[in-house]
Image (cartoon, helix red, strand yellow):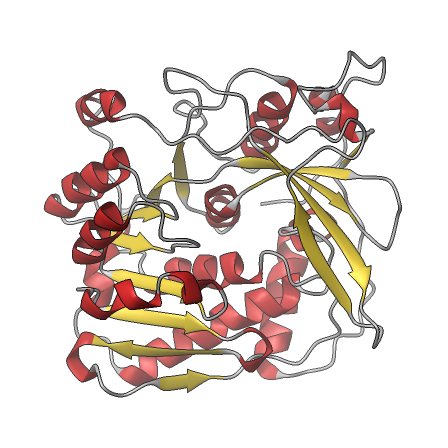
Length: 363
C-alpha cells in the first residue's frame, strides 16, 4: 500500500452515487449541467485538491454519462472504471433553487424531467460480478469512499480495509438494513446529516467507526471518537451569504479527507480532539465557500485554484473578502430534454465537448 508521504499523490477510490446534476438557479433561468452525485462531488473535489481519484460506477455512454465523464476528466479524475459492466442509463438529478418566504435561497431535488414529466434513470450499484475484476486490477488507495450500500460496496470495503485503506462511509439512506449493518462494522469514519439520519438512526447504535461525524446544517457539526465515545464535540459553521447549500456536506468530507487522511488510516492514529476540530474547521470553511455559489461545486467553476485557496484561507481567518471574483464556467446551457433519455429526440442535443474548450482555472 503506497502512502502520500513516499512522494506520490494520495488516492481515493469511490463507489456510490454518480449523476448528472441539472441546476435551475436564481442567477440565470437557463439550466446548467455538472457532474454530480455525492461520490461524483467527492472525487471531483479531491482531484481539485491534488488527489488521484478513481470512481467506480456503471454509467453508460448516453448523453448524460458522456457529460459526466468529460466534466470529471477536466478536473483530473481517472474515469476508466465509470462504465463497469453491465452499464445502465446514467442517473440525472434536477436541483431547483428558489427563495423562501424570508428571502433565503433554498433548494429541492426533483427526479423527473420538466419537459416530458418522465422519471430520470435511478441509481444502479456496481454488481458483485465486478468485484473480482476490480481486485485483479490491484489499485491501491489511501481512502475508500462509499455513500450507498450494496453487496459489492461491502465486499470492496472489506477488501480495501484488509489492505490498510481507510474506509469512509457517508450514507444518505439505509437501503438494505443487513448490508448497512455490515458496512457499519467495516467503516473507520462514519459521517451523516442529522436530517437524513432520521431514517436509519436506530441502525447507528452498533457501528465500529473510530470517528463519527453528524452535520447539523447552519449549526455546524459535531463529532466523537471511539476513544471518548460518550462525548460530542461541536464545530460551528461559518456565517456567509448563502446562494445554495447543496453540496456543502460533500465539501466538508472533501476538506476533512484532504487534510486529515492523506496517509489513509494513519490519520486516525494519535490524532487529538483539538487536531480533529482544526481539520473540521477547515472542512467547514470549504463548505461555507461553496454555499456562496449555485450548484454543489459552483466555486470550482467560477474561481481559479489560487483564488479558491485564498478565499478558504480568508474565511478561516475571518477576514472580509473584497477582491472581485473571476467568473469561469464550464456549465452547459441546454434544455433538460437534451439529456433526458425519455424525451423525444431534440435538435438541441447536449454536446459536452463544446463546453470544455473554454478557459478553466489553473490547478
